[in-house]
Length: 167
Image (cartoon, rainbow, N blue to C red; front, side):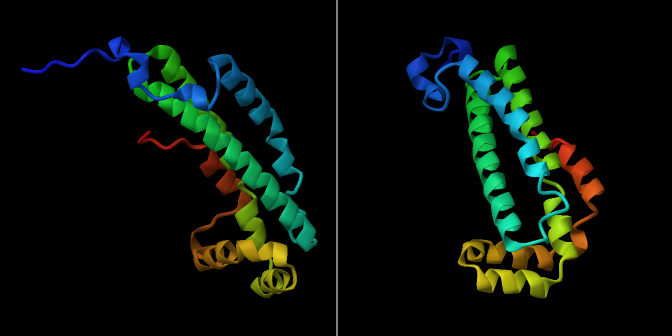
């Protein structure tokens, strides 16, 4: 009957190549710290998205960059944790990544309610008049389609802080 090795005995070459994402755990920790410190960059747009198209464009650009960084953090932590789910250091790293993503969701939670507070015609006009916003046309359409399910910025912030109970 075939036997399998304990995860901590599997040769490194047969595990995820987490070094392709961050060279070292220290590099991960550094980026995680910098990422969390950069979250106020999105909050500066709160209350200003509807003032002019440039604010919306800049906010969405900042959000996309933060999401890309968050994805990299999450992938690295998840790879490390997947190699050996019994490894407490990897589990802690994974927990930190999940927490950072929750902080991003909370920081950006104002966006959907604020966009929904604008008249849809305003957003449509901005999208039609500014080619940089055409990228977000589907997002805006989808947002207004699910408008009944979007709560106030305060409630969305609390929901954003919640971690997925099935992770």
